[in-house]
Image (tube, rainbow, N blue to C red; front, side, top):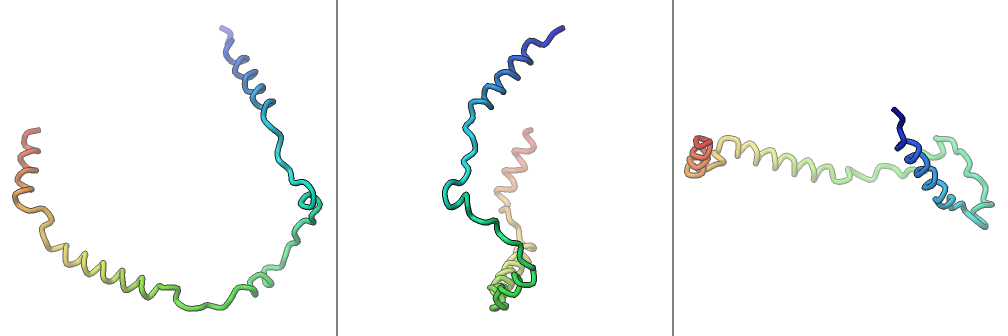
Length: 95
């Protein structure tokens, strides 16, 4: 059994590729610009400014502690009131 669809698909793909525009290379001064030079890592690391502080991590830690305290307070409470729980149980019993 031959595959007549395969040559048609290949031909269509080749036609689409042939109709695609060429890449947009830089022109003018950008085309004549020199390539960037490779710099030693020590020089690059020396340009990094010294540590300026905690970057807000103290505020974030305080907020996390507050959220953990709220979660601990909610762990011992009922989230669903008895009436809603009864409705849920009735709906499950009907299935």
